Length: 293
Image 1: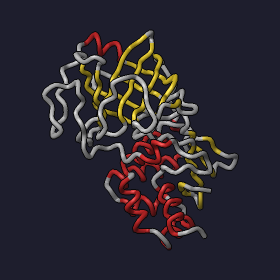
Image 2: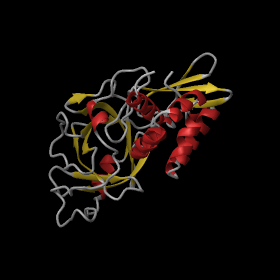
Image 3: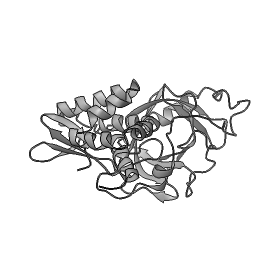
């Protein structure tokens, strides 16, 4: 058996849904960045008279500008750390008059068209501080560049650099894009994902781990590293919720016996800069569990 530290790292990433099962190493920002939900925030330089203690005051967006963004957009390219994310085409953004959906996760958003470049701030309902970004329509493409860490300054250009924590979406209009058929997800697996979301939203970390890991894999972390695993999963809670919600919008690949399900996340941008190739589940005695096997 590996060292105590390696076991913790191994199972902690598995139960947080942020560990790559038998796949390539995560991008640098996914390894080094913390949870995307805010602790502190620097107010963007383009928003006047705002302070670090209160969200920025953004003028209402004019109807003609909002109309330019409304609808579905599909990524042609996603860039992080100065590099294009492998197989990144396919992530989806949807603007309504009041909400912005990024890979199935809903946000409130505000646009300040008085800034150059135009700024966009967006936040989930339970966040105190927004993600800060810039947005532009150019030659039929929608460019969105934002900081994945609310403590970082707002980007000033539509580009990323190694270690800056920024994410750039280059998107094209995609009205009428097909959505994932949730009926293609085995009902019991969908129930397991819903239950995991419920436990995390209620901050029931022990129940989340105990119910999501297969008995043999659960026993391994209970034997060594349980307390540290609880601490780790607690810190990764918000990223994990974003990933779980993304899975619900996807259709997994199933084996012939329908006892293994693989979610391909290579085309999905997960908030906080983490975008992992695959998530594997296996069915044991009629129940679905996250697995590293």
